[in-house]
Length: 223
Image (cartoon, rainbow, N blue to C red; front, top):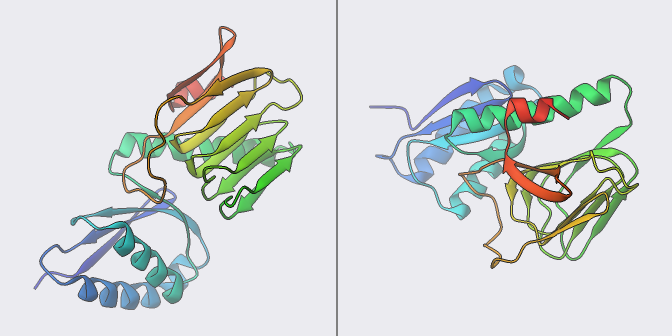
């Protein structure tokens, strides 16, 4: 009989191959056992998670994350999709920010989601390990990278810096501002939450207006 769960690692992440022919409870049981057994291997690493092999609902996805949390010290920072090239590009965005911080540039990490009209302000570049929910906002005088969904508001380059940028795993903002340039999302807001399929994007100023484009190594390297 095939395993209910196969765990494979990739750069900065873990892929779970789930058996579609067993019950979901069997999946959770084996997931708990395997992560408990591998606790010393993964330690307290911060990683992205990809789920393959069977369709899971948002509720099941949350149960998977909860099982991993209870049986290991792994910190799952986001759930990503199956597009390997897209995922690599987003991981490069995080590495790009970490590289700047390692050189002594001022910056910080914030673990958690912004909701209930919360506002987070900083004078540094920031990496958010969570979502920015509708009605909430992140404000930075420098750059913003969101390892999650941007569904609320984000303001980068608050000191008038038009070279600042905003990167998000899921880009569905209510409002954006970079330097003195504003962008307002005019289409109907989609349902927010953890999603298995994502399309990382970067927002920046081009020709005196804010544009959003798929994240690529070449584009990120130009900043």
